[in-house]
Picture (spheres, rainbow, N blue to C red):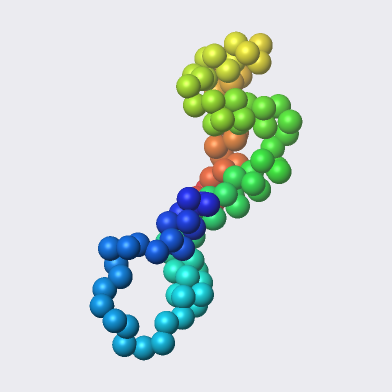
Length: 108
């Protein structure tokens, strides 16, 4: 999100044309860009849903979530081994996490 905000607030030297016709309002222009940007809105919404999800998960599921999404190179089987769980249990916990995410997102 910070990178997207930086992209929106940094002037693009290629976009500066000839002389301006009206009064320049750079602060207002930046505020409008930030408020209307669909990518930024999506990222903020996604972050809000993930924050709510983490607040609603039990500690064990938070650990699983963090292992999987902070270390994407780990496979579910490796997470099961690290947590001393069976593969069936880790997949069941994954399903519960994803169902809670879908409920928060409004898709279930």
